[in-house]
Length: 564
Image 1: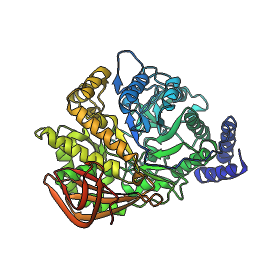
Image 2 (image 1 turned 180 degrees about the vertical axis):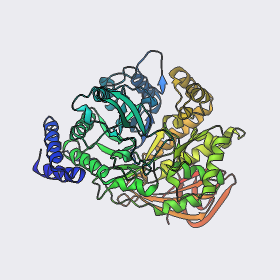
Image 3 (image 1 turned 90 degrees about the horizontal axis):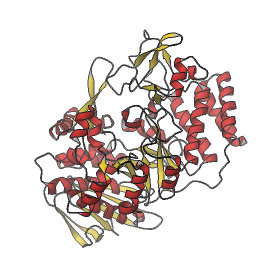
Image 4 (image 1 turned 90 degrees about the vertical axis):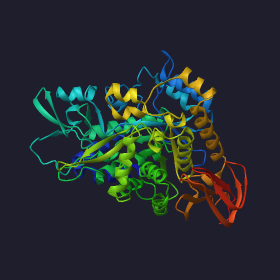
């Protein structure tokens, strides 16, 4: 280990443990793990307008008994090609529950999806994001089974708790018990389980565990991970008497990982997943790029939904005006839809209780469900809307034209914002609520996790269908976007509030001089903007704009060389 890195690692470990014996042990174990890796002096990559990410399970598209990753590769080659540069593979490891988020073995690929060879083959065509589900592990894993048997080092990999202690301050994401009782070789023990009885929280107070995870993440980088997503990372460190969320030790662990990556895998970017209010979320940027390279823009999905339901972009615009990246080394990961629902905690302080209730009522009216969190005082509050994003925007009585127009307006906002856009595969494919999957499984999130036959998708995308209309327009806009340097994550973003019904902002690349004015009519009425400064070519319609911009209901414009 380089002297400079060794100094940083020791500083991080001191901040994490505040215990000289643990610090020394962790440093020794990390040194041993890192000794098998070669240092990489090639330097990191700069974000660009060509960075976009498709979010998908490895088996969202299936084709008989063929391995999921090979089917995905076949779909990408035939239909997506180079319109999208990166693919986020949701957990692809063996698992027991939660659709992959209860991993039994971090180092193996689920055989139904394929093998590491299939992953590496895909990485030759696309940048890949791996999920690192490192807050918890399955109770069926060798690690936890070793804990139950009292084996070293696993007996310290998990958090044994006193059930009589006071846990009232702990943040609860779900209305489930925090502790789970297990029979062990040493009698009954209560173990910390934030998310479910099958997802056992890991103990980062154990130096052996910390070294294991650091080694695991470097292995992922070696296997082709351009991005590594740290799932539920805010819960990583536990300390009674606190919320056990976003604690300083958690931030230091991420910074430690970043320090190691800078030396051994500088091209691999870290993205933190924290479904929490905005200020907590952006705290993971750290200082001068020393923590996450990207953070999720969690307020975006509910704010865009609110805009298109109410026909006013004022709240969204007001929030966008407050956004400011701390440096040109980091950026936002923007998304609207994913394998999870639409989180509503991130809009605490942005939407009133009445405005939030509008989202809840709309989701229920449009066929979705609402998940709640335990507030620790006997009450519950909305945590997540479980609904397909297209259905979240338009009810069952809406016309296809209205639904598709609203949906494309939302996705165009996503593609236009400062940051890297993440497009969920069911959004790209124009999917709707999967009532069958939700009902038969009893899992609300499966309303947006449908598995689709490849032959059916091919037929839909080649025939006359709403899927084809949405897919082709999404691909067209992605291809336009990737050729315009104004959409680089490093380009500036300036918001204008000309009319509440029209979200208007300018993206400008200071290095290339490229400038695009984005205008999205979020209302169901035609809107007109008149200004001598509105001049340029609308990249979406190819019309020349000279002082007057007319936008039909939910219509969008990307006006190049707008002079403002």
